[in-house]
Length: 452
Ligand code: ADQ
Image (cartoon, rainbow, N blue to C red; front, side, top):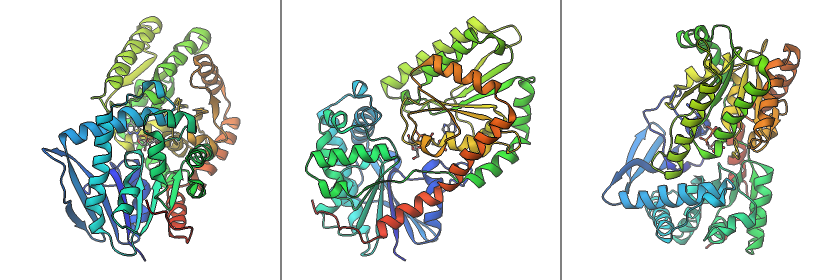
């Protein structure tokens, strides 16, 4: 069996075990357990200059090859272009995108450095699977160095309409780089349609044929077990006690402007103002650990949310009832799973999201005999696998309030019916299936890549 080489901006820490590891590492755990594999990418540390040879660490059949990034390269490539230009543009927020030629040069420089460091490590029959928007040009860099192995690319975030993406300076150049890959995976059919149109528009019709949707999933059975176990643990018990019989609405997101948090808070405020029967009866907990705190837009979002929390609680709280609880520190996954099982409503309203695994985790965490209701943004990729959710336009706080009201009043029979259809979707489109489908496409004998 050929070796699998996984490339991502951030390589998972070899010391992380299941419970603490993040989404990508968990999803790919299966794939790396069955064959020789190598992770390649940034070490997570910065140094004076970007390393030219990677640090290698081997654990059984799995090798970790990581590079430290130079401080200036990190600032230009990661904070500047990847997070400051690409992330907002890919989430349809061109107005938030800040372009700087020096950042773009840094992005290309780091991709070239990754290519230079990776190429000598590759074996003849390796399968190379590159992840996410930090590494659009890596395939083209590898081809330039004579790498002929099969190269796959998966984009975890959305791909917007071609006209929007190519309005970002150098957008068309990045689309052209994608033509170096043999398989170009995205989360949804809509992303696939958009990316194919972008490739066709720049004359890469044959590359457009190599674009396909592979919806990312979770290990539903594993998450359900974790949730059931955590629900009878001490932390969930303490939390339940503090609710004194009130119904729980739960939100879990990274603190990011794509997640629609101000609109969501506004929707909750509308619920309290318009549907007064829920006053005193509901508690909304939002867990939103700070991410990318060194980027200006994230700092101002944090201030805006602090204001919302003060305003909502100031206006609606009673001495014995605080309607909104808000925490910006991370919570361990098993604890979160227990909280998800306790919540009558999972509130997931991103303005745009590639997939959104929290929505799937919420479904997997439920008690089949008495499940909760998922209120979900129409603009999350996960919609396709979650037909039983109450869908909302996340930009419309009134619609969020109305969906919350419906969810809070929903009887058990309807909740069970809706949940069953969603659980089936989550189980069928598992992390395992995602990985297998992508690998099958990458191993397949589709058209070979166009050398750059
Ligand atoms: P993210 O934007 O990080 O991922 P998401 O898929 O919802 O979004 O979350 C990834 C993981 O982080 C989940 O397992 C979740 O439980 C965990 N997580 C989120 N908030 C947390 C919190 N407050 N505390 C602890 N853990 C938390 C990107 C894309 C998504 C896509 C994934 C995978 O933006 O659209 O679904 O990659 O492809």
